[in-house]
Image (cartoon, rainbow, N blue to C red):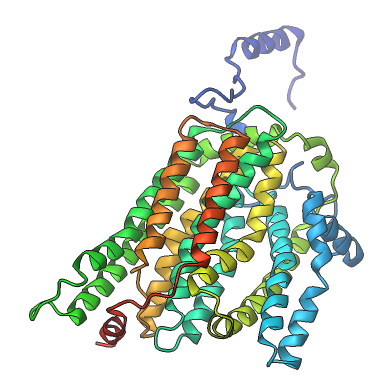
Length: 467
């Protein structure tokens, strides 16, 4: 039986504790992170779920009526207002089967229906993320949203005949990066800057994100630059077919290398440097201006979170499939540019969940979380989704490559440089955000008038894919 602690022993222990160095809270303007007490981190590394005050629901199992109520209220007013659009979901599904000849209406209804479905996916992913280690939770939340994009790419590849939908996929890849970097990040800076002079974010998030994006942009640019430089300089030895074949091989090799870069990115975030990002996000969590309200907010249980994710993914994927099936009719019959369709229309709706989440976080002064939700999806699109589309197309015998229109790939690289320049000082304000959004509007207007340009080597490239 252990002996009770004496007063002298208690005094000695208190003296030792007071003499031990105490962790100093993180300052927004400091680049060096403090090391938080290890007791807060060690349990997270040895168990998957971190159900604490950030994600504890106080319930177990499934309660249907309460589940619906929590999902409808969501996390913010904007997200709750989006849930008013849920009647469009069954209407879009019903119209697809009842009147398949109404192409414009099917496209329009499914376009709107994707917004509340994606909103539920973002909410459910966020609920699950709060029950996990912070970095892993944010990356998993991003991965769930990326499922929508991957489904779109796969359906487009499956429906492609003779390369007619390849330009839409290529434009959607670049449009996804543009939507996150200019529209979403710009709105975060603008909305977050309305209530304060500036917001400060940590260099660990901004530098890694912009560095990876610059590398990804460089990788995506190489096949296009190679093709554009040598196009028109063919001769008897170096024919158009040889150029197309070489470009396709370079695209596939680049795709594999970018996937390796994505694996390194995951290892860096989840293993070797996860404590740094965990500390940054933990500090950001405490800066949440709605923290008290968030702690009191009703939350989903683990089971309910998984059910909501499955339901939202089902509805989102159905809307995405029905939407993609009508793209050719909209492009051909209505004269909408395939570049505008892929670069602007598709990315805006597929990224709705991430955009709403990031904007709400920026409004609540959680700018590092917002940066994660803007930069991580862009990195994932460039380093995983785009290479995956190339490799799957390769397996299907499709001529899916990374030979983008020079106009579009230059826009992406310039956007990465502009955003990187804004992130360099570690601070943001509404002016920088407004400028990013205005640049995106200029790109949208220009893309609307950008004509459909046939690649001079498109036919040859298609033939090369089958050799």
